[in-house]
Image 1: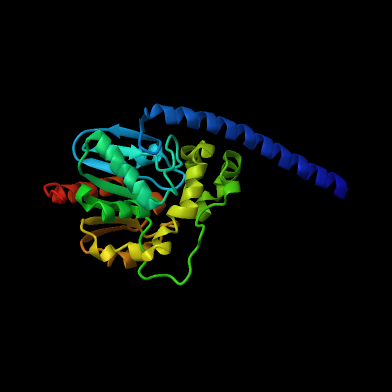
Image 2 (image 1 turned 90 degrees about the vertical axis):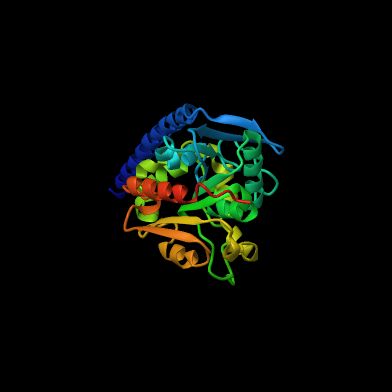
Length: 303
């Protein structure tokens, strides 16, 4: 009897995995079509290729996306602003269409953004970061204040309040999980672990085209503000900052954001009771906060 029970369980598991495999292939196919629909442009920079979406007119918002992102995630974060501003949404190093410069550090990512801006004839931008893009955006604002009208941290990674005695050298999913099928199988865990709807997986597909960026973020980008704490001289940041954060964010600590905010010389903090890491349901409030911030600082020419 036990033998038949084991066989039945194995058959059920096998059938489930086959069904998930079919669903995964469909999601990959649709994900590739979705990426193409953004009409991303490609530019050859001094070190290699960068892909980006460039839409709208007016003040430029440079969107710095998070982990498992790309030009699609970067644009989607700012799409509600596209009618009022020019949205420049590049893929960061290792994400769809973008090569990696050197070691791929936040400093090198900021340098690549400056080269992109120079090539497009853009002098100054508002830098908006989400999640893992925080260290890159903060690095950009520190290194190029003359190119930065303002820094917008949108449920973003934040600087530490003091130099840590130890930190995670690798802060992200292991490489073997960064594949289409493994992540597709894990989607039921998105809610309890990340506070995200399982359908978020469809915006991450194909994972295979984002793996190099995910591994780079985990090994280099995410640990950088701890690894190089002294180089993040937040107290002397020369640009205004807008911090938007949800209290129930499971991926970027709200408490950490509150504590870190005191390091910024000039900042506005807008908190949301819920919405999670994507601040879902607060699109109107986010739009108003960003618009007010841009209008307040729009006449200032950074030197």
